[in-house]
Length: 384
Image 1 (cartoon, rainbow, N blue to C red):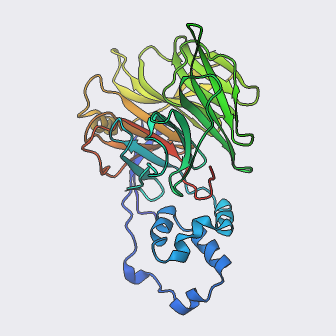
Image 2: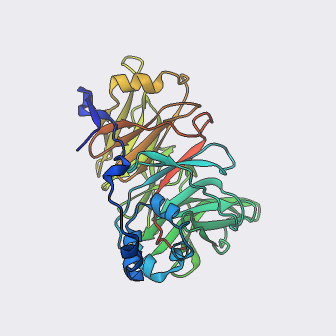
Image 3: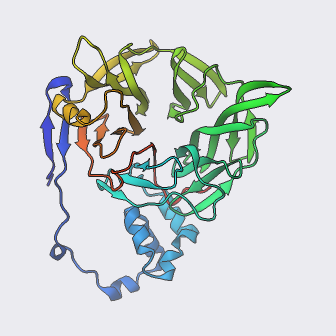
């Protein structure tokens, strides 16, 4: 039975819902006979545990040494590979040191205290994080290296030095689920003979090598990392107004002239099902303030408004925000987390496919000014 309350907005065809589901009382659960459980063969236990929600598995690892060692079992990791995605997680950082984060799980509609830093990994997270297929990639300033890690298994590796770039940061990451191989795109500056050249390099885990790409376009945006859509990474850019792209197949850079409305401010770029969207604030003095969702029509490169935040929810969302405050949009598949910059500000989840808005439960670090965030797909089988 669906216990959620759904509110129709009328304008823009969107709605928002308030989830009021509650767990079943303890007497609704059947006890599993201990002797029957202990007699199960190991491979069947591995198959059962692989299908658990990831937060439950992380708790159950503390039950016994055998379960705690499952992450070192090739058989268990093979079972995890066959498990469908449990959906994205959204991580929000509370300070510029990237040391403390709160993790929102949409499938359970709750926050998890999942630590990101791995004690043995070199350096702390610096700048923005790129993510793909359960792996995180960050630049560790303390050792001047790019580090790839799985925050759930606590496994990590330091990538080899780049070929040319001296000052860089990860701007994109992609992974091939079939082969478990990944690529990391970094952009930065190559300084030689007193001249500086903007350039990029791509690391391929299948060959463990970096490759130099052609020079990045002028005014290439280093922040935030790009979004992946149809084997191409996309970034928003302002000069010229539009998008910067990197084609992973042809290894080529390009710029697309796709100007947004002049009154469109503080926007974020997301993708869903092969289509690119932007979510931003319309500040047209001749019309009511709104937060709108625009879809990019290709190949015409024209933006079309497809939805906007319901007026009642908009008033609540912007009530305590400063006039010049900006908000961030963090997308993954159909879901977008929208968070206003500031302390104790509301956070929303928007479903691009269903056009549904949902309030998030209060973040455990809401009293802090959240400085950054990203999304990733938690996977126990993702290998560095």
